[in-house]
Image (cartoon, rainbow, N blue to C red; front, side, top):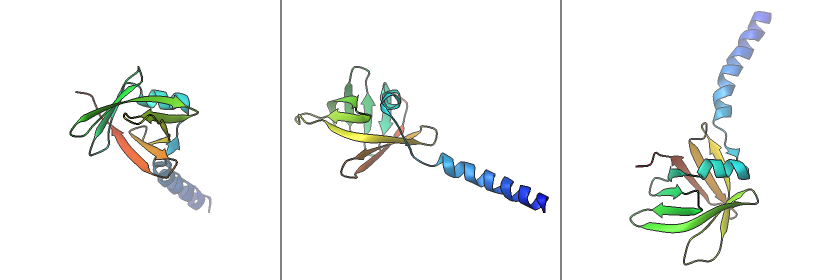
Length: 117
């Protein structure tokens, strides 16, 4: 009986660990800065660079420049010609390989870290 229980616990612990690793984890202000500062994300159709001085570039066929900052535990950005800062919650998964930005309206943008050229 004990052997059967131990095998069951071992089986469940082996399968539970990968499931936990797949969960999205919300980042706080300092973790957001660490996750974005001097990094590049690939969204599939575009890439975005985050510079330490607060500049950010978003490149599809053209490169667009904006500003980024962390305020009240969220990532915020502004993209000219707009003068409105838009903020997102940030979550990560797979040991920080993926980030997703969640807007107030429920829109989600997911990116993966890539190396700079």
